[in-house]
Amino acid sequence: MEDSRELKAWCLALPKIELHAHLNGSIRNSTLLELARDLGEKGIIVFEDVAHIITNSGRSLSECFMLFDLFHVIATDHDTVTRITKEVVEDFASENVVYLELRTTPKNNESKGMTKRSYMKAVLDGLNAVDAVELVSSPFGKQCLKTAKFSKDQDRKNICVRLILSIDRRETTAAAMETVDLAIELRDLGVVGIDLSGNPLVGNWSTFLPALTYARENGLPVTIHCGEVHNKEEVNAILDFCPDRIGHACFLDEEDWSRLRSPQIPIEICLTSNHKTNCVPSIKDHHFVDLYSINHPMILCTDDPGLFSSSVSNEYYLAATTFELSRSEMYRLAQTATESVFADDAVKCFLREIFEDGKIYQGT
Ligand code: IMP
Ligand code: ZN
Image (cartoon, rainbow, N blue to C red; front, side, top):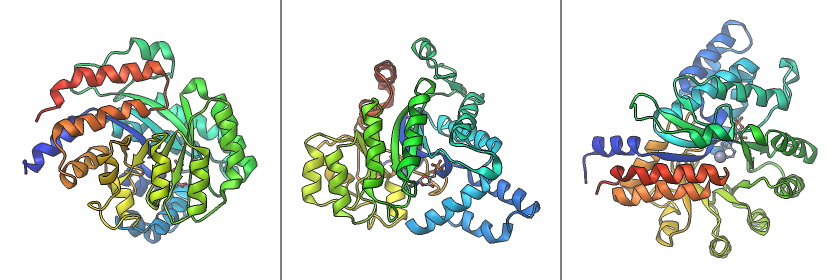
């Protein structure tokens, strides 16, 4: 097997597309600890109670959701949301993610004077504040995008960012509709789709279906967290809806797989996340193998790089080493993700060009 340092460096240098990353799951641990310490000093939380939860990297799916509740206490005021967004985009750019669809759940937080709209304004401010990288989409104008050229300067990483608004499974139909309305309103500012996420043991599909249908009727593509737990009835209903993409797809049976195959619904694959949350017994046994063998469209993603201590490059490295993929195969995997992005054709063309230019990355 080739030298692991060399392969890691190659995975880092590879241009990558990230389509499934939750903003608050991507917070740097150092930032989370700093914010928690700050709140501890102000007497809002007891720092010692949360420090070990933040630094513990092995968590079950339900522990992850406990941690998200903690994040929401720590990370929910406008300035913090702006800071986190900026840092998260910088982190993705620093590892050669050339296109990022960052998803987040717009939140109301009365005590901080936050509405879903003001939360999104804070996110947009964070995107615009990115200065260590060139935001190709900044300020989300399409003209910017058309003329943008990737810099040859090695220190200057370029990233094109789009947003997906998440509906949390704890929400009501009315709250989910509000999120879709907001996404429609912010479409010209870079919002390209809707996601359904949150604790898979909470909520009913029928609650969210009206909002997801409304999104589709308004031309917004939809991606759904599907099959994170055994729930045949819901998986069936999701496949009836036929989303534009699906996240995870862990607990699916043969019948579900054949339904997924015929419309070729792309799957956002999150190896580390699925393994750490015990959705798959091991990475070696991940359904990636079966999907890869039938050439099903897949995108390697992180889900929550902060929460799971991973990175997009690391997910590529894991796939290469676990499934013994060559550099050409890895390159093709990164390149084909272009066809699954929610952004418009101009962005797709732009990304296709990047990968055409990047023949040097193919290696052997
Ligand atoms: P946010 O939407 O930016 O606040 O990102 C964190 C949120 O994403 C969590 O509170 C969950 O609702 C959702 N999320 C993150 N990871 C997962 C996952 O693995 N399954 C389902 N939902 C998730
Ligand atoms: Zn997710």
